[in-house]
Image 1 (cartoon, helix red, strand yellow):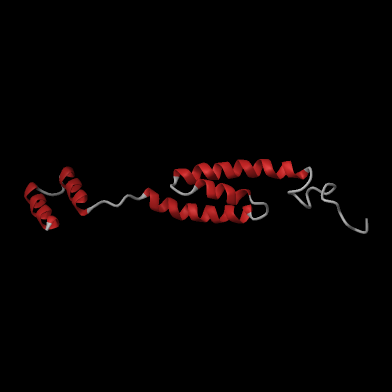
Image 2: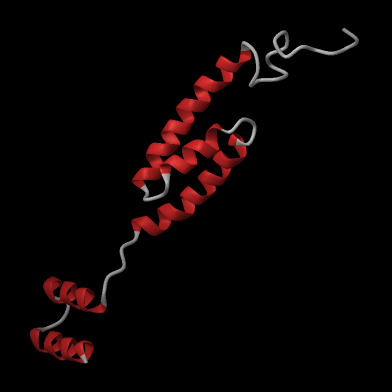
Amino acid sequence: MDGFMHPYTQPFLFPFLGMGMLIWWIPLLIIAYLVYQDAEKRGMNGLLWFILIIIPMLGIIFLLIYVVLRESKSERVGRVEKTPLEILKERYARGEITEEEYRRMREELEK
């Protein structure tokens, strides 16, 4: 055969061909499904990420990109910005300011 290795005889050298295909595709599909679910929960396009993850050889690169984007997005999702009026109401409810201070500050904020 002049040094040529047939993909069916060497499945680990050509992982997406031959019998080695099942060894690589099953975990890849499981990972892609988990990424799909996670992306949907975070308001990202789950189907797009699923497809990008299962692309042979490039899927690993896209998986790493997803993990980086996921981390940066999770920081934004966890924080909910409060309006100044909501903060003022909370301070009044905790007793940090008096009713008079609350009314004065509320009027200033509503201007």
